[in-house]
Image 1 (cartoon, rainbow, N blue to C red):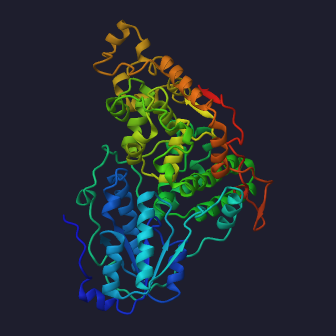
Image 2 (cartoon, rainbow, N blue to C red):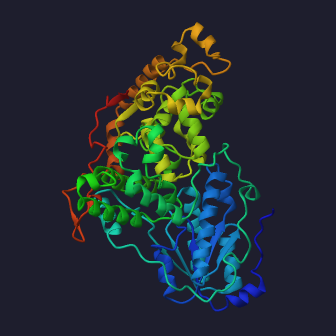
Image 3 (cartoon, helix red, strand yellow):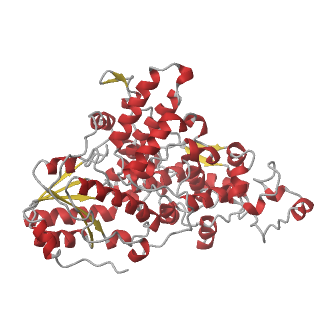
Length: 548
């Protein structure tokens, strides 16, 4: 199947859309609920909606068929919702300025409406080019915040208050009417499959990969708030229990199927209802909802880091760590890690699960990054894009900020070096998760499944396991590798310039301590409090922590 951009829209389509002056550009906001640009545009008159398949973004090293397949499902639902309200969705293939120039020529529209996109360098440059083009063409381009990320933010002193302000208004209803369109929801044809866009999957995926769309996202959140997340606070750390206990709303927030404001309000309303119920009748613990709401805040907090300092996409937040891992291992080591062939069963199980499902819980993401960054001594930039392709909820700001934090190069975070063996014993004590994803060692008893090299030769032979053949031997000596990593990192933190650069990073990116519980519309809304900072303003140079 070929994907081409017509030089002009079909004449029959242009006649049907004649006189429409407002175009709503959908990006990472694939919904009609709580969509301010769509609401504002609809008040001016009939609208045309558009979505762009941009070759520069599709061909980027962090793009994957996984992301498009999710977006494609969301777009199909979005197109139906728009058509029901009288607006078509035009899906065009080409760079943004080229596409809008063709739309301008075909329709003569006067106003362009969209959300701001908090993405990476590619989307930033794209938006700058659209801004120049629209100004030159006399097009009014109105952008609206899509979350609590603030453009041109000088420091974090007032950011939490701004987060509260943006989350406080009630979510907007979908417009009742957008025009008089009565044609197909996608007038330019069906959405192309991933292979037509030359998108390949990083790994083979299972049928459990999440499906896109607002309805799927709202169902998932509703199920979480009404029982599935009952023990979220207790079960979020283990990959064996997190799959069923975490909200897994993140892909729907990433692609904008559900707005952050709607998620916050639904959860806050749920919290109020829970407090009115007797403890025994509550389908989910109060602490679980509060923990979820806190993570909604941190979602925007981490995206804000990249928005405030775009160079962090390619450079360490703390400049003193540049060159730290220049002596890192070969690409073969990286490939072995990404393939889930490290010889450490719990690490391999997490990587294989992530590759197959597109999701794994936060603690295991931290452990995987820590393992790559410390015992393997890989620079985070080397595995940034491959891991991005694995995450169905890939959000550049969160992804890059977290990789740097877990790699110990922000300067303002406690350096946490996870021991993958202890993590396996703690979070998969019976080995059920590891056995599922690393069947090569499934026959071992639970007390040895995370350390197969400790099994005697007789047991290994009896179980049909040959280390180095049926399953890899450990690719590193964990203890010595960690000692070397700690020594190198500690030396970098003791440099003369470390403290001053550390203060610069904190002033720009450090979270600020919140105040006491606030009231919101008469409800006790814990989410509108600023959480306690995890980033100390004056960390000590030896602030290293080996996580068990």
